[in-house]
Length: 155
Ligand SMILES: [Zn+2]
Image (cartoon, rainbow, N blue to C red; front, side, top):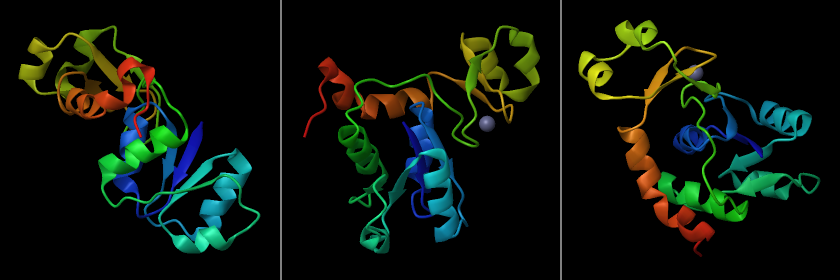
């Protein structure tokens, strides 16, 4: 499942990445480029722009109804029957996150408190951003807990 989000859906795009979905997002992309990426790479186009709905030949389009980013995530998870989160992707650039084996290699990139109090770190292969479970990521997954409970997606 790969996505591309339109310019109005930046928060949704970052959250889908944290949930592990390959999601492209360019804040200033044109409609024609959005369509090009979606068709060429087989991506589902996520949009709140109703004029896309009039394009009849576009079958991999998902119209996002809610204006609330958390509700938007839930809409997408329900529509595509996602039962559990995947390993995360980088919220900034969509890169793949890998476990950091050499803790010392990231010591200068994160706050000292975090370095000494957290066990596992992930680093983005593409841009080098460092992530750790236990801050915003855990809270975010907790907000979505009801979606993944018992493998059922609530209506
Ligand atoms: Zn990155």
